[in-house]
Amino acid sequence: MLKVALGQEKTETKEMLAIYKKYTRRQASAEEMQTANKQFIDLLKGLGLGVFAVLPFAPITIPVMIKLSRLVGVEILPSSFSEDSKIKRQNTKPS
Image 1 (spheres, rainbow, N blue to C red):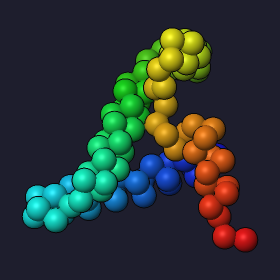
Image 2 (image 1 turned 135 degrees about the horizontal axis):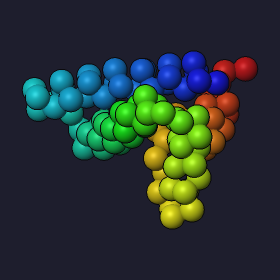
Image 3 (image 1 turned 120 degrees about the horizontal axis):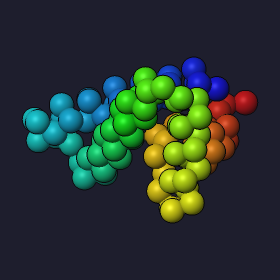
């Protein structure tokens, strides 16, 4: 599960960087920029959780933070870790 989610994040991050490179040459469309900006936000979310992963009691604090954030309507996990993303990936896999 974690390996798949991290692989998905890696792929999306490479795509984001390619879009930003196109943007510097004024070749990126508005839709591509929206996709890249969403991925950038996901990257920041992952980095934010990474800071908490090195703190003591991380196995306790991270799940509590995720639960509390969802109670207030904020998603702190990157999109590749969300349940909606898993369902979408399963539906788009070739049979």
